[in-house]
Length: 418
Image (cartoon, rainbow, N blue to C red; front, side, top):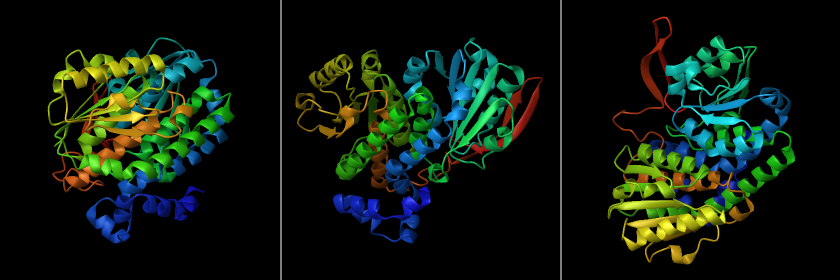
C-alpha cells in the first residue's frame, strides 16, 4: 500500500541530506509546518515519484476495464476544470497517435454550457473526466448532459477521491466507469501538484493499453528522473525564487505547452496573483506575447528533446537574448546547450530525460514549475497550503447555479481544481 511506502522515511531523509533547503523545511515539527502553512504542499510535491509507481500499478490492474472503454471508439474527449483540463493537454497528442482517433481537450465549463454540441461527431465516443476531488459542479453537470442525451457516448472518470460526488453519482451507471486513484493523490493543499501528475499518468495508460510493460517501464523511468530532479535542484529552485521578479513566462512545445499552462497557473495561484504569468509556445511567442517580457520577467523554457523542435526553440532563445528580454532565463531539459544560456541564466539539467520520449517528459518539467511556485510563495510570506489570504480563491468554491436545459437552475457547491 502507498501509505506504507510513505511511512518509510528513507526517501524524505535522502532528500533532506542532499538539499539543505529541504532539510531546513523538514526539520521543523509537523505542527510547526502546519502552522507555517507548507506541510501539505511540500509533501505532495516530493511524494510524486512514489505515487506515480502506485498509480501505474492501479491502471495496469484496471486494464480489462480500460480496454472496454476504448473498444471501437471513433473519438476521444479529455475534460476537466483548471489544472485537470491542462492535464489533458499534456497527453492529447500521444493518445491521438496511439489510439488513432480524433482526440480533443474540452474544458468542463464548455461541456456544461454546450453539451453534445461541443464534442466531435465520431461515435462511439469516450469522454474521460479527470478530477482531483470529483466534487466540481461543472463536472457533474457536464457528464450528466452527455450521458443523458447520447447512448453512444461512454464515460471514464479518473479521480483522486473515491468519495467524491462524481464517483458516487456515476459508479453504477451502465455507460460509465469510475477508477479512483490512491487517496494520497487527493492533494489537501489548495493547489494541485501530485494530483495533477498522477492524473496525467493515469489517462496516459489508455494509449498503451496493449503494451502495459512499456507503460510500466516509462513510469519507472519517470519516477527515477523525478527523484533525481528533486534531490539535485530543490535548492536551485529556491535560489531562483528569491530573485526579485514580478512576471513569469513559461514556454513549451507540443505536450510541454500543457506543462507551461499548468506551471503558469501554479505561480499565479501560489503568489495570490502578485506574480503575473503568461504561457505560450515558442513559435507563438513572437506574435505579440513577447511584449510581456520586461526587465522584471522570469522566462522558464521547457526544452524538447526532438532535434527539429529544439532547433526552433533555441532560435527563439537566441532572439530573446539578442533583444535583451527578461530578467533571467531558466532552461529545463536534457543535454541543454550551454550557449543557450546568458551569464545570469540558469540551466536545470534533468538526468534521465533523454531516455524518456517527448510525449512523457512533461511530468519532469512540471515539477520544476511546482518548485518555483512553492518557493516563491514562501519568499512572499504566504502559506503554500492556502496562499490566497483574502479568500479570493479556495479549494472549495462558493455555490453557483447550474443552468441546465429546460430552464432548470440548480445551486451547488464544488471544488475549484478538479
